Amino acid sequence: MEGMAIFSGNSNPGLAQNICKYLSLPLGGAKVKTFSDGEIQIEIHENVRLKDVFVVQSTCSPVNDNLVELLLMIDAFNRSSANKITAVIPYFGYARQDKKVAPRVPISAKLVADMITVAGADRIITMDLHAGQIQGFFNIPVDNLFAAPVLIEYIRNNFRDDMVIVSPDAGGVERARAFAKRLNADLAIIDKRRDAPNQAKAMAVIGDVNDKVAIILDDMADTAGTLTEAAEAIKNAGAREIHACCAHPVLSGPAIERIADSVLKSMVVTDTIPLTEKAAACDKIKVLTISQLVGEAIVRSYRGDSVTSLFV
Image 1 (cartoon, rainbow, N blue to C red):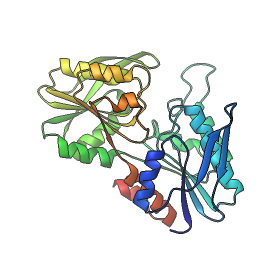
Image 2: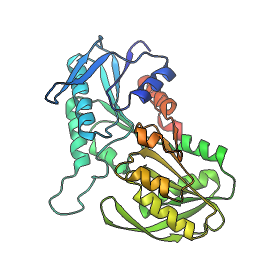
Image 3: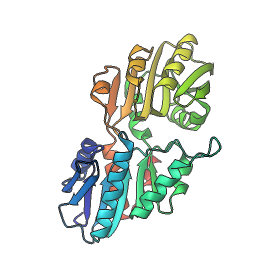
Image 4: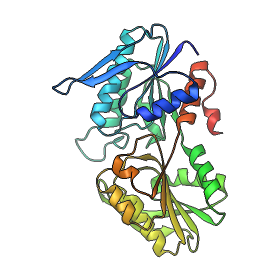
């Protein structure tokens, strides 16, 4: 794979190193720093002319800094005559702002997609988009990967047969149903009403969770309000144990305190976003790596093989 190069910004260097380890490739040399006034400085320290370049960068907190890093790196590779530039975005920020929910508000996910395209990206590899239709915001190919193979393997190896997969809201039912089918588990749904952004109130449990091991499944955990409210409702409905699985550990604001104080016995996340020191110190949180999954998708994209077959 001499015609291929992997680079990383500052958002998730650990994941980028693990991807390179899986691919048996060195991480490309790049200087990604800031000037004293806060402007981002990019310098690529190796020749990328006619190479297929993959830039690994999650647009997680600090979201805007990481997004601008990604845009400037793409522009730098574009101006360095790279053959093809693929933005590998394990966590795609602004994905929750994918439609107008009130008058006079932006569709931020579409604007971010446009910026990445205009910067010069030729392809996007991302994971567990908050809404699948965001793929249509891009005018370039998008491979939306799923953490499901990693999470399902963990669930199979660590939980008994008497389990139920729980969707914390109506929007996640399709995802939860797919997990339940592959695990031969029951399915339950939380009837949730959201009063304001990042504030959720779980109302009722639809389905039988009594005396079962309940696994709440979501694409991300931000302030953990949804998870903890759902866990409380499931506990009140008679569940024996309650665990949570999610792909993206955003974990902002009071999330860690809520998880620590909740009835959740454990929470499994992936390394699409690096944990803060505070989150890493929480003994309820376990991190699974998606580096091999992303690495395999990169190889297949480079070789022109099917990426979809990874999830069949």
